[in-house]
Image (cartoon, rainbow, N blue to C red):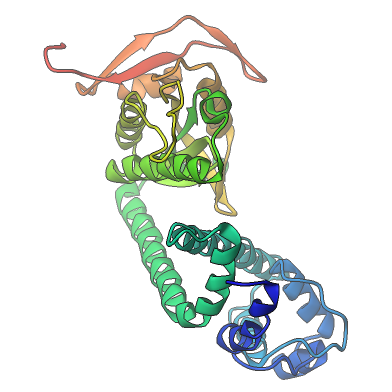
Length: 350
C-alpha cells in the first residue's frame, strides 16, 4: 500500500458496512424514538466506551437508533433497574472493545506475514478488507455468545439439580467453586530482547496453551493477564486436575516459534488452587478464596501446585493425587498458612 491517503476512500465503505447507513441522527432523535431522555442516550453511549459526541450533533445512524430502542424496550418490558442496565451495557462495551481489537490485531498479524508487508501496510490493507469481513466476524461473535450463554444455563441447571433439598444460606457467597491462579515464572527475563513478532507469538502461544489445558480438563478461564491466568471449576477434583495438568504442561520447553535465538530459560508455572464460596460479577470472581489462591500462587515453587489445608482435606481421599504438607508461610494480609503441595499420582506410586 502507499501513503495514508489511500485509506481515505475506504471510509465510506466502512461506514456503510459497520454502521448501517449515514450519520444523520442526533441524540434527540434517538431519545424521541426510544421514549427516553437525551441524557440517558448520552449515558448509555458513554458506558459503551464509545467516543464522546456533542449534544445535537448528527453522528448517529439507524443502527444506533434501533439498538437504543431495543435497550429501552428491554428496560420497560423486564422492569430493569438503571444499575442493572448500566452493568449490561458496560459488559458489552468493555468486552466488545476487547473482541474487536483482538480480531483486528489477529488479522493485521496475518496480513503482515505475507509477501513482505510491514505492519503499516497490513493495517491499510485490512481497512480495505473490513467491509467483506464484518458479517462473518459478527456471526462468529454471536455464535460464541449463544453457546456460552447455553453453557452458563446448563451449569446453573446442573447445580440446582445437585443441591437437592439442602437449605439455602443467604449469608454465604453463592457459588461453590475451585479457583486457581497460574503465573509464568521469569516472564520479563524470558521475553527480554524479543521483537514484536516474536513477543506476540510467545504470548499467544502461552495463552492458547493455558486455555487448551484448562478447557480439556473441565475448567474455565476467568481472565488472562499476559503472563498469568485465573481459572475456576465447578468441582474440587476437576479444579485439581486442571491445576496439576497446567503445572505439568509448562515443564517442557515453551518457546516462541519464530524467536531466533530462543530464550535461554525454560518456561514453568506457579499454580495454586482453593475450594470455597465465591461471588461472580462483571465477568470476574471475588471472595476470600480468590485472595488466598493469589497469595498461594505467589509463594509456590516453579512447576508446582499449592493448595490450602481445607482444599487438601477435600482432596485427601482421592487416589489420583499426592498431597504433601509444606512448612507454614506468612501470606500478605492472611497471616500464617500451612500449604500443601498437590501433584498427580505417577505409575508405580502408591
